[in-house]
Each structure stands twice: as C-alpha cells, then as structure tokens.
Length: 382
Image 1 (spheres, rainbow, N blue to C red):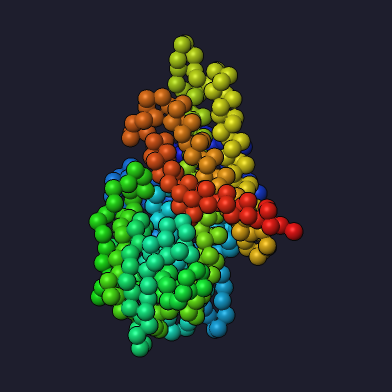
Image 2 (image 1 turned 120 degrees about the vertical axis):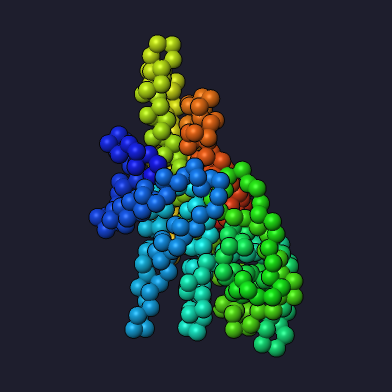
C-alpha cells in the first residue's frame, strides 16, 4: 500500500482507505508507519526482493514490547492497533518483523527481571522443532543435566535463522502432548547450534529462511521462560496475535493491488477505449474492493476480541487469518490478471504481491488448520 501512497497520494480512493474508523491517536500511529515505510522501504521494494533487509525490524520493533519504569509497565501498542497499522507496510520484510514480534511478546510477557538485559537488543525468531502445524507433536528434546538443558533436534523453515542473535525454542522436556513442552531462550553463539542452507523461496525473499539444528546444545536452565511444561501455552498466547498480523500484511498488499488495478484500468486502452469502460472489469474491481473492506473489518474485530480477552478470540483470530489471507491473495491475483502480460513482469509490483502473499495461507497454522479450529469452536459451543 505504501508503494502506491508514495507515488500517487492525490489519487487515493477514500472508499478503501485504511484510516476509516481510527481515532486521531491511531491515525498518528498510522502516519508514522506510512511515512517510515514510504521513505525507507517502498523505494527498495524490488531490490529487497533479491536480498535480505532487517531495517524495519530494528526501527519498528519497540512497538511490540513493554517499557518498564519505576516498577510499572506501559504497553506501547494494543493488539487492536497492531492489526490496524501493520497493513501500512509492504509484505516480505514486515512479515519477518511479525515473526520477531511474536517472540518479543512471548519473551516480554514471561521473562524474569534478570533475563531482560541479555536479550533486549537481540532479534528473536521462534522455533517449533519437528512439528510443522501440529506444534504439540514437536520432537526436539531438552534433557535437564544439572544447571543446563541439553537440546537435540531440528526445525525447518525458520525466518531469520542464521541472522538473528537469539532464538526462542519450544522443546520437549516431559512426556507426550502439550504439557511436556517447555520454552528456552538460546543464544546464537551456543555450542551445538547450527543452521542449514538459505532456502530459495518463491516469495518473501527479503528475509532469510533456514533450518535450525541442535546437536547436544547446552542451554542454561536460567534461560527457560516460565515453568517446565508451560511452553505450549506460552506459544499459543503469541499465535493469536500472530494470525492477526499475518492477515494485516495481506491487507496491505491487497490494498495496493486494488489501487494499482484501478489506476491501470483508467489509463490502459484496448479496442479504442480504456479498460475502465468494460463492465466485466468494473464488476471485478468492485468485488476486489468489497473483499478488501470485508477482510479489514474481520481482522479488526478479531483484534478487538483479543485485546479485550474475550472467549471468542481464538476462533475470531482463526477466522480473520483464514478469510483475509484467502481473499487478499485472490485480490492480488486478480489485479495481476487485469495487468495482462505486464502483470507478470518484475517491473510491476503486483507479481511480487502475489508471490509474497501465497505463503500467508500456510503460515501460523495452515488455513486448513484454521478451519479445524473454527469448526471445533462451533461444534463445542454450548
């Protein structure tokens, strides 16, 4: 969305603007995100499609952690605000930011006062070794030996692996099932920690993805977050917000795609008139805008539920992730179709939106898993 905003600010369509419904304070937060992204990110969109960039992570990271002053805590941003402002960014690089955010929330909520100093300036990707979407079935083990845990196992597809300084790892310290899982913080320099090759991905090329490998990796017991057996619950507390964030990233790319398609239809001519005269394309554009606004409303409802701690938060976050990632990918794909052959060229950003958004239907629990969560909630609702 910033790509369009920075180049065609006067031609924005008010009907689909992301600021509708925000308070003045929230609009100020949004403006900060827009301005930063327009200045520091948008000009590098194509360049970062070919190489790693961690710029946005370092600058925007404080939005998701707490400030501790005089034994009091002030949350910089609410869950609902995260859902509203995340979509101002470009996909790929912000998606990596989301992974770090997930771990910052976990670390900030469950750390002790002694644990803050060593990790405060680090980047933290999460790792659920050997489990995929089924986090409770993970295989990586951590055996307690004196004042250390010895980790063995691996996890594929870790965003930021090899580049980050610290890793939040869910590992099995007890028996089978979720109650046997604990959470450890592992520093990159720890002997026994290594990484696989950098994966070659269809999209998300602005951030590195590698396997994380633990071979007799000795981690101090003091690095455990929470108590033994609390790891699964700790992870789940971060996942709901993560699903809102990945949906919000989809909203940003879909918004930009609608704007780009709208502009293209008004200037591209075929058969002696602009494409905007075609009723089929008019209706298609209307459907795209409707999908976008409906997705945004669903994401914001889920964020509000999560912030308020309502019982329906898990199901609504799953619904928002399922609906928004599916619909926003469709929007981007339809925008590419409207561009014809030009849409398939890397000179035009819509192809990057399509490539980056496709994985959103897989991340944070596949959309098939979202359907399982939603249906379970419906069938067990008394």
